[in-house]
Amino acid sequence: MQTNKFKKFASIEQLHTIAKEALKYGKAGNHVYWSTVKLHGTNAAIAMNKDGVITAQKRTGVITPEQD
Image 1 (cartoon, one colour):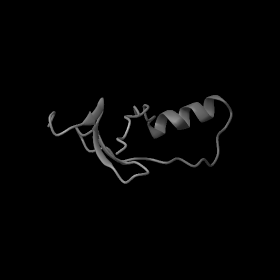
Image 2 (cartoon, helix red, strand yellow):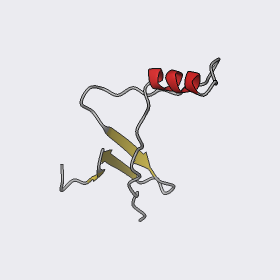
Image 3 (spheres, rainbow, N blue to C red):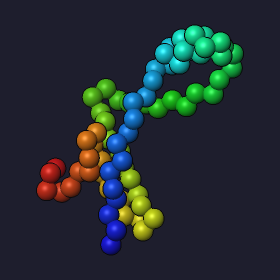
Image 4 (cartoon, rainbow, N blue to C red):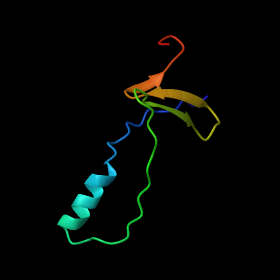
């Protein structure tokens, strides 16, 4: 059985930062921006690999039953 490898999530810029940078480089106008919701104090993910193995993740890695 194959396990999931942890992939660290990059920082997400806030919308006002994106708008400021667009103006700075003369790219003002309509832009597509995909946002995410982060509940206060929560940084978690659920991953499923090609084999259907589901893994719970925290900000710094995979959560195992031994670590919970």
